[in-house]
Length: 254
Image (cartoon, rainbow, N blue to C red; front, top):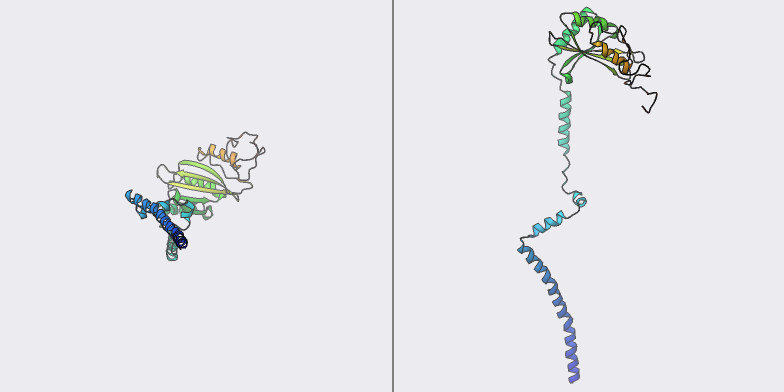
């Protein structure tokens, strides 16, 4: 009896023992967590701050996926901006303050030289509303004399002469200024690209001398009537004209 009772008691003790140990383990595990929370509270670290730190610790790629992105523009907003751009383009520009001056220049030239002398005229707005005239190549000498000698023009100062290769044609561009009238003018003269030629005006404006030589040297435009049309930058034996768009150097290494 005693042995059996002892076995039962010992068996009962052995059955209760795991439960008590488990409960004790749970309490042991809970204790560190509670201790960590208390330490965080003592440092003034709230759950919200902790969540913010964890968010900041995420990789940049993870945060970039859909987080912090601006919402796409609404279709209505995009349509309104597009309509505003179209309206801006379609609105007519205000008349240039230099348009009356350009009209007067064109009228005087066509009255004296002929209507065919002016191919085109326009205001170059980006260049300070500069009056610009495209003069027919064959009429250039007559127009040049008129610009220099006529009192309504009096373009006594040739500011600059330059050459341009447009691939399908060449152009010589002249910029003039009247020191007495204080007005300016740009004249463009087109030339055939295969055999470009524009009459020299060195006898009308002596300052055109070296400019015409430079244009001939680098672009190959001839200036009939020039007193000394020869290269000014490149050696006389240089082959080709370096500023032409179809220029191919004889020695690619140079």
